[in-house]
Image (cartoon, rainbow, N blue to C red):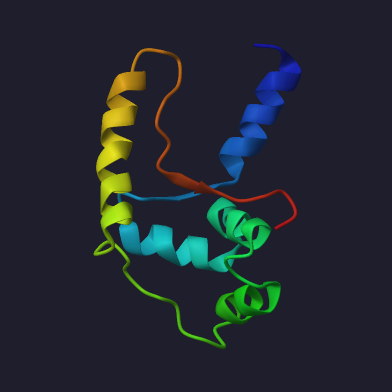
Length: 103
């Protein structure tokens, strides 16, 4: 690993937050910033910028636990299967929230 790669890794690890092994802390951290899923929803028009801002500022309530929706439950089940299939390939599962450099 080069010095530059080492510094980049140190920076990244310094921005690691809660793990989903502590689901409440993980969800709390996700609520503080914009997630990749929310960016996707903005791009495909599933949510408006105004609604996302209102959600993040607590002006409107969150949907809460959506695990009862079949596709979300299926996704959670598949995460384990995919992680198992990738084990040993050099791609490791990550459970932590990572924060952008400039929030």
